Length: 339
Ligand SMILES: [Mn+2]
Image 1 (cartoon, rainbow, N blue to C red):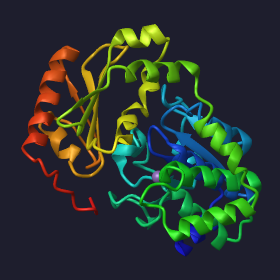
Image 2 (cartoon, helix red, strand yellow):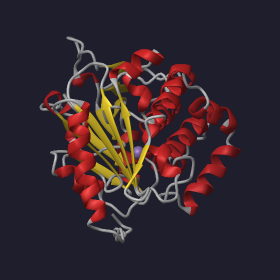
Image 3 (cartoon, rainbow, N blue to C red):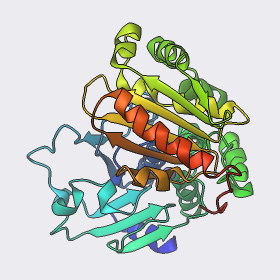
């Protein structure tokens, strides 16, 4: 960490970036880092490879973060040579940074990585990876403290956002005592946590909640209530005036049921194309391995796949295969908890 701080101390113009489809951790930690650099008199610009999500835009606005959104295309005059340092936060792999590798081919500056993911590539000049950290925001908070940068209330809020986004508001198993100690420190620095909760969990568009209520009526419980299946038809979006992203957290709802081990959502996208199938598991079934037979993938507890054809055809294939898998494994052997 000190090596990263040394590099940053010598920098004049830092380009900060993070993974595509940035989440609360990516945005909160880059925003706090940009503000921290500015406090040290170092100019910082954030490169966003996807649009700034409306849900989290407030943190960039409140910290007045200077950012460049290249989702719709890179500006013709973009030059990496305008910067002497590249700081990548919350990822360490090129696949999460589309378009950046080529533009860095002749970059003479330093490439730094601050991350908490296991998957890494070795292209950085200096790298600080802590896979025990619940969020990149935990590492950024430590870095700012070691560097002697005092947190403003809004910087503290940005870091709190980063941490609650990656821990499901301290619910997931990545939450550790250090996470809670840091949360306390961020509250002491003035993070407005109740306001943050409302912004993240109680600021949805009505269409989203209406669509979720609508789609829940399709819920089926199969295999002795161990498998939950929901279907989203194109017409559902039209009926509820909803968009494709509005189905995001729907798949978690059936997991509230004690007996449900796997939740599946079959989604006929409003834009057309293949049927998108999402899978979630409480851990007894490895849904990533299951998804592989259909060319999909993901994590043991959260995976996805796509199937060409109608929703009915996708249903037959995927629900058929999952039913067979569950019935062939009546005990639902638990996964290795480390997976
Ligand atoms: Mn993260």
